[in-house]
Image 1: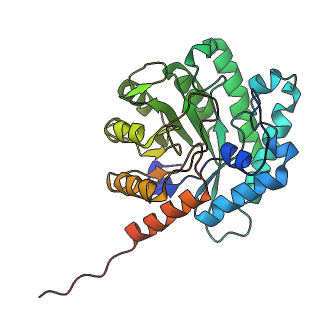
Image 2 (image 1 turned 90 degrees about the vertical axis):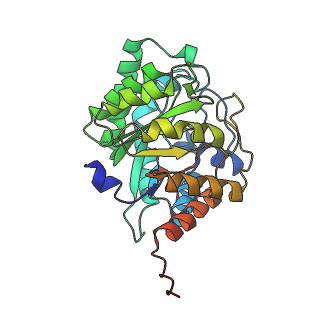
Length: 299
């Protein structure tokens, strides 16, 4: 899919799924987190997706962040990797039924280990094998595009992106940025974005970080020659998997997003702690920015 076709106008990625499920009553624990949501609470998961559709999302993220064979094997559930991934994609697709606009379903590919523990990332051979398997499951399940997200290391970001690209589907890659232009493995954000820009991906982004970290990433994103995006947390990450569910002030979010749209963002959404109300703010803002304003009469 040509980049110009996908991002002819700014798109809205949905907000958080995991923390929203928790907010609505799902009890989670590591290492699976929300991996079994599609099996255990399908109606609750569907309601989250539907609320993001109603809020204006253009891209729904299937609840597959932790459905890789690698993660499920830690609880002796590796045989569920394919069926639970398929179910999660099906539920996201269900949420698009009956809508008046074209909605895309993205397959989430997260890091194999804890986002905030980059030293735990497995060796390259394991990363290549497991990300390839997960990407193939997502493609087989029928996603429209791959969302390689929350990547805390340069090494895993590149390996997971290449695995996603081999499916032949469009790929968005998003990095877990920290303050001062670094990833969590201390790789310079500028150089990692430049490496990703050499690959035939659709868009590069940062996510699961504060508004301030997003702002600091924009010079590197906007200089890379690719469409770029941002989807922040509701507040600073607390260093534990899953981030935070503290509410982000809607006026503050609106002000930040308005600046990002004006600076050229092609995709904005939300990560941990963001809710459908945050997407509604983005949708209203986008509508205002894209609606031609009547010219003022000359004096």
